[in-house]
Image 1 (cartoon, rainbow, N blue to C red):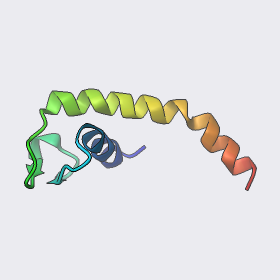
Image 2: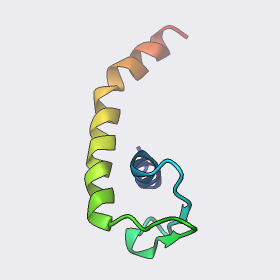
Image 3: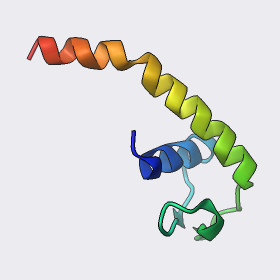
Length: 68
């Protein structure tokens, strides 16, 4: 999973309505648009969860390719 995808999924998991811009995949550059800022530590913790979920679902992704 690409870093930008992990960052976006993590932020949206915390706040599905969040509007933001991240420059060069650097969380310190987040510009929040009409959204209460989320602490970077909270985003990073959620990114670990997002990656774990992605990794745990690898079998399903592999299996779906077999049945195409």
